[in-house]
Length: 532
Image (cartoon, rainbow, N blue to C red; front, side):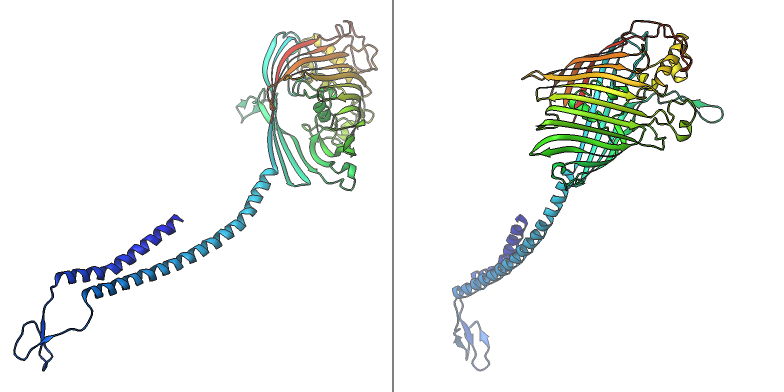
């Protein structure tokens, strides 16, 4: 707008200057000449400025100087008016063109704005970080307290460490209202001593030991309108890919303290992520949830293990809320979980005689829960049953004797390692467990008490199993804001049988084993969770 005003002003000044030039010249001429009598010779028509023979005074009929100035002024005014008219016409045309351009741009903007707005609203990026400081007053062998957390075995009391036990980067994209894609890389600590030959005359050491690395935890495609034909299940979904386990993820959300410790079956052997096809969601009647389910078929391998079998495993969790629930865990609930599958062994190896993963060693896991949740507190009791669902690899996932990993170690662990393998890797073991967990939020404060207790029998077919254990966690959490939490807690693993000598079992390859009961583990933790 400012540009058009400047142009118009220049036009007007130029026209006025042009018109004033002859006016100024005439004014100068008229001001510099005085009135004078002229004379004319009638015979020749010549005009003279002096009188002479035959010359007569000349009389000019016409306008005065004032009249001439007035005529010139009128011409200047006329030219200025014509120039202004042309300029106004030009401005009107320019304004019309600008209005047309603005209209076209305005028509284009909603499409771009809609595209940018919709694209941005369909992408969600988040992060999840678990960290801890841990002090072990007593160390021993046993499962991992947290995923990818490893502590040294007996003889390392007061070992302590700062750790990052889990980090996620969550990428969620919903190109349409009915499809969602999730990709979640997971940071984890590597362990390894596989050195590598480098050329003919040299070698390099492994760079795996202790480094942090990334792997894909979740990578799935979810369809949100597969049950539109059923009004009660219209929000349910179908999922394909590497996805949350039907029991573990659900139980972690109900417990609310996954950043502190693992839930019962996850602690024992069940992976938190499975690769396969599933369906899940609530069943809602009269705006209340009465059923919540998750059913699927998956690889026998976990998300971080290559699939070796020619079979698949099935999992199903069904939660029933007899009085209806206003949100997912609201009120009284009854939950059942069943998992049936096979050890992750290739078909040719599975047929070998005596293998613990052969045709007779199909595995299952079951969990039955009764739980009650309010906005203030939650409490759950769980009963677990399993078959071949807890191996020596699971038992020593935190740390174990060198002999378990094919490395030479102290002689006293040779027989003891063989005993544990003979108890757990028979191919016909039976597991049983009892658990409770809960939390209580102190009203009008950022503090919450929480705890978990687990009593587990790794093989009930052994009359007195030296590795029967109890595990308990007790702590208090502080909610700093909606993204950040802290927890101070103690975690304990106790093998409660009195010390004894385990008798030889030739069928299981177990020699006579003195001091069969392992040492307990006790630790204090300061945990932190950042979830955005």
